[in-house]
Length: 84
Image 1: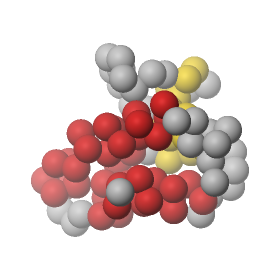
Image 2 (image 1 turned 180 degrees about the horizontal axis):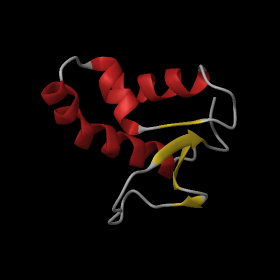
Image 3 (image 1 turned 90 degrees about the horizontal axis):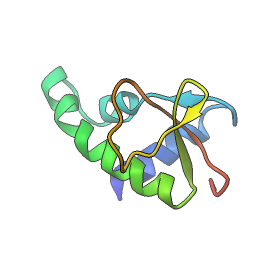
């Protein structure tokens, strides 16, 4: 729940069309490179769940990606249709 809340907080603090990197979420909760990197799998799992519910969208460039599938390369998180 902490990760989901943090993703929502960070997106709410940006303009509606802005995006954020999942590492921004991890870095905001853990100091030190090893600590935030260890959070990344959990951030992606929570982001996948939020994307499935429509709260956020995960994109690569302008293309929406399914985080439940195999996604390679950097992604961005954006507000979804059900973002509150």
